[in-house]
Length: 598
Ligand SMILES: [Zn+2]
Image (cartoon, rainbow, N blue to C red; front, side):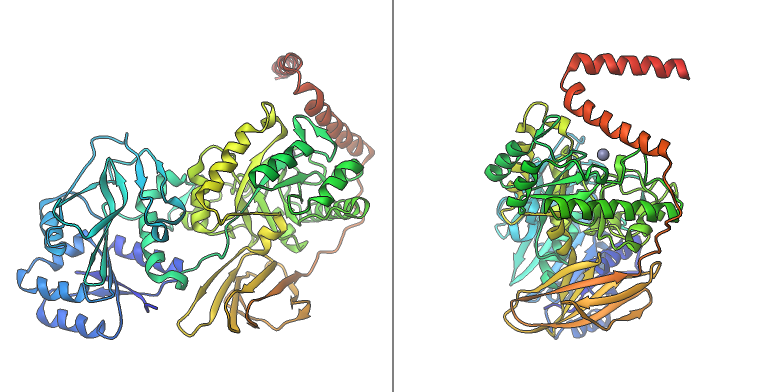
């Protein structure tokens, strides 16, 4: 196992060097910023420092040009870089004569120069042959490229020691060259994304791709299990709102089950707790008999407009408590279990709502937008979107779900170890299940290892792990209930960590239902568990639940308003949506009324 990434610089580290250092740390890889003087003593010192084990070097085009400025030292430097077993990443490149000459020297003229593209109308083509490196992106083709930062390598046609990993217009963008049992990787993009950059919307995978993913592919290939990784990519379809009746609008559960069985996927219903007494017995039986295919999560409480846009803690606690009581009553009446994961009605929520869910021992929120309504604007970093869950809102995990618009975003989810959640409504099945089945088949074609399962199983698998050279395993948790599996043939020590800002008091931690000691250090919770070979442990963090304020009474007016809204939305789903003429008449009438009321 390689000890660290050596980031070679020829001066004080610049922004790009520091961005690479940040990315390495983020992935769990140790690094050293090494300011190398291109002099004989400087190069001898580097030779001594890296003599004992295989090394991983990363350097920018700018560093390469400076380090190769003196012809007398180039061979010595190359012999250190290309020592057996070493790996080198050359990145942050743009066309230029000086760099062309340095790259020719570095690669013994296997790469002749760097060229640009005239416009963005090209696609990235990812090799079909290097799945261990390109992973879930293997064989994909998508665009547009970004001709301001994406360049092409012109290769020497006589050179036979290379393999292209990503190409544009049949020219390499990401290329590897093997020499003397060492491997040089070259990424022909300008710069490297700053993972700490704040963004106001979910960054599309296509835009991140060339200035981040090849670098991550390199680090994951070289450092393997020493990088944070998940054991399993999980997936589920989430359908919002339906009651559990034979039909809800265009949704028919039996037809959906047939589609799930034929095309290998699972569905979770974002169930409105207010509907807890309305489940049809036959549908309940269908769910009970197919628990590995159907699951339930919680969708609001009454599902009134923006009910989790609330900032009053007491009202939020009461709402969540009522939602939980209703879901528990539904479970008693129907035998259908549910996951304590909240899908916010209309996707609207506040940070206070996130904290209230944590205090009520919910496991996660699942939402299409990761941005709360309050406080606003709330910025997230690119790095927030490179983790299985976003923890920036009240230290409670938010899992992103997506409408099935762009397969590449789902590929990105799988690549970084985030669960794949597709969101649909009954109206999306107006023309049958063909569109859904198409996206499911595309997702299943990314990897045969994607496991479609229930929301509970997905959340129990929600952790990252990495190994150190002594065989210890480090795990990072995101949620309050996980199952950690030791798949090794020997007992292993698991060091478990979770970011924990103590905004809610911990009552107790249980491992396999036994109270377990834990330590807090700088807002990081830490516990140690020995796990026997081929076995699992169940970790449960129990937070101190808030007192239920029984003085909050719901007015009769409010009860009627909620009931009216729920019945009207059923009527809309079951009758109005199915009649285009009726729907269009109602939409026109309501537009007319609202224009008169303004
Ligand atoms: Zn809804």
